[in-house]
Length: 241
Image (cartoon, rainbow, N blue to C red):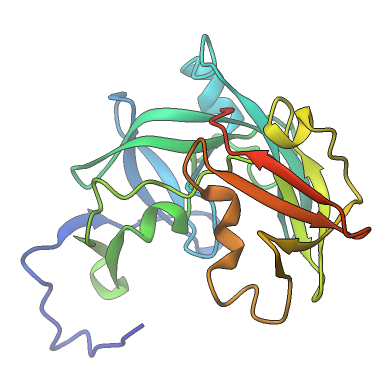
């Protein structure tokens, strides 16, 4: 992260501009297009690790879940608590003229919470923004996106195992199992503990070494999970949504 004096800063000409629009409670909005539909406003949420979360009203207005398969579920959590959302894959998401393909997306379905609103179509997270070098210029109400290496080829981190876990220092606790996923088919349930991944113990470096991306491996690859009893379980990573 770098900071610049706005009076002397000049945007990189390679960056594509987006207008920052005012939202509720000080949030900023940007426009993006889902699968070629007219551009709509999304909450800019760099603190979210997700790619894009589509709000219920917009999903229903555009029938975005009609005939969209495969699909599954995941548990998302924030300061207001947790919600189970539908997950599926968007063919395209276009932002500042950059067309992103095969974007894993969340479809919010509850009738309460911050995401139950008609004031925006969805929430845009770091899973998309991380493909770019992002410049925010609040003095000019602008955002600039500079494409990162392989932005149009780099695959998104997409869960292909089906486990949502909490890091507990020396183990991972399973808190949710996605229906139809390899983990669900193998009989995994919430509450179980994972003490090692591919025979590497869970330790204090787990969150900082990239090991937490183990569920995003290539389809067809195998991951071996060790449970609290020391038993090894192999799962084949699969596109289940």
